[in-house]
Length: 282
Picture 1 (spheres, rainbow, N blue to C red):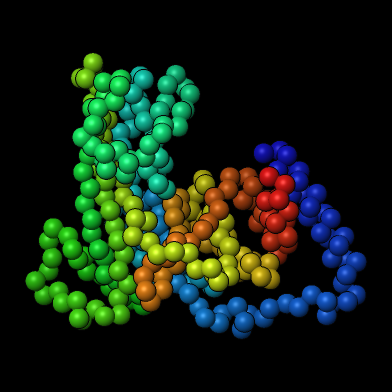
Picture 2: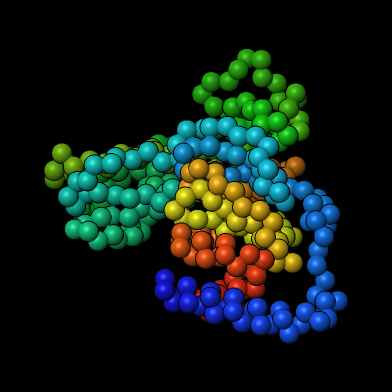
């Protein structure tokens, strides 16, 4: 972390010198106006670990609507010696905690559910299930109706929601039991919105940086390097998606540590230049 901090400060210092040298010829570097940035406004859907789905304007960060679908991850908080697992809320990747060491396991919760019921060579029984739900959402108001679920409103008619965005939600439940010691068992529920995603938008012009420690996000215009907005969503951001007329698309975002996030905030509109150099170096 100290190396990263030092690198950021050095790059920022060099950037100030570079900016001073070229400041006499401002025509060399065209700057996008706010009018250009607001053209073709897009809607982001931000999923936080507390279960909220929040729609925001991609160019301004203004919240359009939000609703809660329940927590993305439910797992035991107690520690069992040699039988404590930590799931990654982004993709359900499992980690095993043994004597203070964390080991990445070669499977995720969705993978275990797909192959269950099964038994490991260590005598662990795995049993899982999954439930799929389609959430029909008005992209402007956030009005929603759950469809293709266990219970559907009798008044629901797909024709009345022709312009809605359909979000695929999958809930995985996994149970683990140690056959050698029946007192050792572990259950978890993991919610995933990525199983029905459409491909990334290759022309998407923004870059999103999220804090791994809290709910803040910083959005940068990839072409101009301008910082467009930052916002705190009060809970750790797990994933971000792009809402379009044809559905929900994958949207890349970069999660960074709290100290690095704070340092990047200090450099302001120079952030894009520094990020490019950092990604090349690391």
